[in-house]
Amino acid sequence: MYTIDANRFMNSVLGLTLAAGALVFLLTLVLAMIGGPRLARVRSYLYMFSGLFGAFAVAVAVLGFRGQKSGDRPWHVFLDMKYQPKYTSQGQSRFFADGRSNRHPPSNTVPFDGTDYAADAGRHEAPNPDFLRADARYFTGVANPDQKDKDGVPAKPVWKDGVLAGEGYFVNHVPAEAVTAAGGWEPLLKRGQQQFGVHCAVCHGASGRGGGGEVAYGIVGAKGLSVAPSNLTGPDVQAQTDGQLFNSITNGVRNMPAYAHQVKVQDRWAIVAHVRVLQYAAGR
Image (cartoon, rainbow, N blue to C red; front, side, top):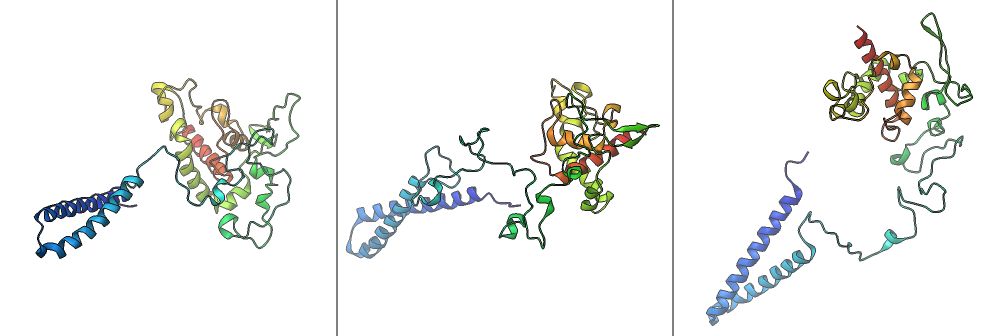
């Protein structure tokens, strides 16, 4: 955005100012050695400028140049709220069992209407149901949370004649709310392609085929990961429902970490839709 390095520019200005001060100081010494009443007025001005440049040089020597780093503790003239007893973001807390100061919102809480400032959470004419995240199908990809076996394994969807006939634990398809929020399938797929390129292609490759070593389609896979990134166009991933793919992106699976902290819900559904496009393209 900027074509000029601000630190380099300001340090250049400081250097030129210090150089000018050094010249004034040398000129003052020369005229002081010459002496004579005819140069008294000139010397008085030079003494004044030498004092000003000298004070400036001392300030630069103490404070340093712009962008200069230091391991010393910063100066705090007014301590104000920086040192008040409080928890900082991502700080620790011995009060809670998990040791975190940041707390998750309690489940099943009542949605609220944002904050006093529109920049914080936005203003709404009515309570925002998204704050409650009550729609499990959209926010978690879960259709039937009670459908698990005795070992806690989510139930698989119902297939009939090669067609999905019923939902298991996860939703079978991208929820209609995700399509509506995107403005239709076309913008949803475009967003999914963009987000896949940002978060997923580095391991799975732009084609989604993953792999490792010489056959890797992603940058990370080519660097010799102990476990090759999955082929998202393979039959095992194709057999998964959209909700299960959404859950894998949200919570991670095997060696793949969770992406819920950096990819919002709407974009996760967009990525799922794009994965289906890659699967269709690979099958042709």
